[in-house]
Image (cartoon, rainbow, N blue to C red; front, side, top):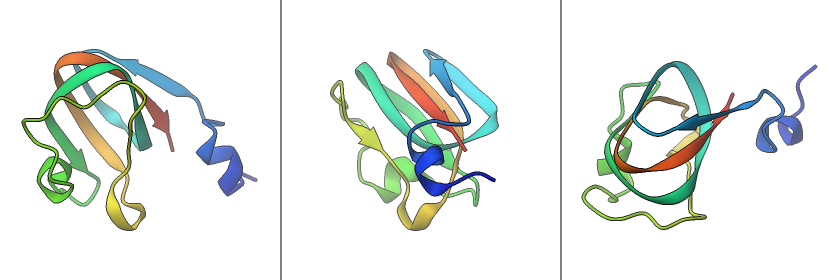
Length: 88
């Protein structure tokens, strides 16, 4: 059985993302190198960039991006930089 702690520490795996990622659901993203996002779309089709007011900003290395209310991330597109997607 999957525990919440196991999910939070990446127990289901991580994925290194440098361009576009679709087809998996991520609990959160960890910025590996300073990044600019084109899109981050939630599982409920929420525009997470707009919701978190982080569009058009450079997100610095080490930052964690997690949608509100436990929504999962389903699509990530980077203009520059890289992130680790923590698989749900």
